[in-house]
Image (cartoon, rainbow, N blue to C red; front, side, top):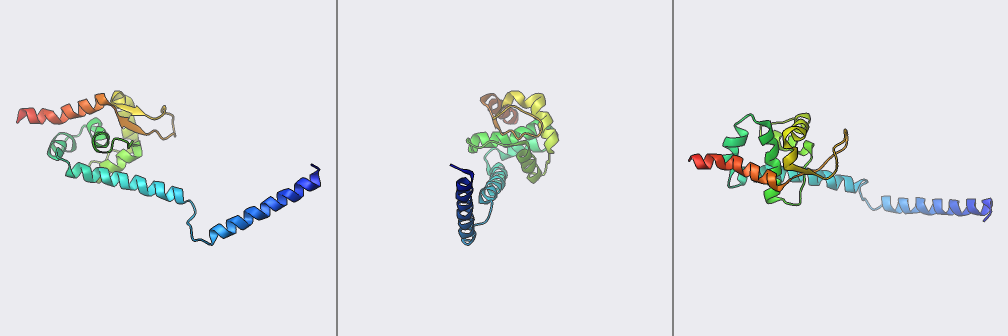
Length: 160
């Protein structure tokens, strides 16, 4: 294939691509539709978790043992525990934990969530990839973490 023939065919492809883009733009489909769906889904899951925390059976124990105390690790584990129990396929990022704790009125900022995870909570959580600065990691509570958090909540029940 010579250069002139190649140039002609590439121009035809370019024109075809431009026509396709024009016809797609006429159909009122918003650009970056996938991005909008992801943002809605993330906002929905944080709201679902907050509502589930407030409506779950163990809310009184959660309020007394986690929300009313100043323990950052327990506050960080709370959203993971609710996800583990009620939304088993859902993982959370440090930013999600900040949003959830903020809506519960006990905000733990993202850097503090990250420090708590790398400090004492790493044995209770499983990440989808290794932690690197600037990279988003999705965490889930493991079985050991679920047992630990349940023991935190049951301490008060034994005392009753």
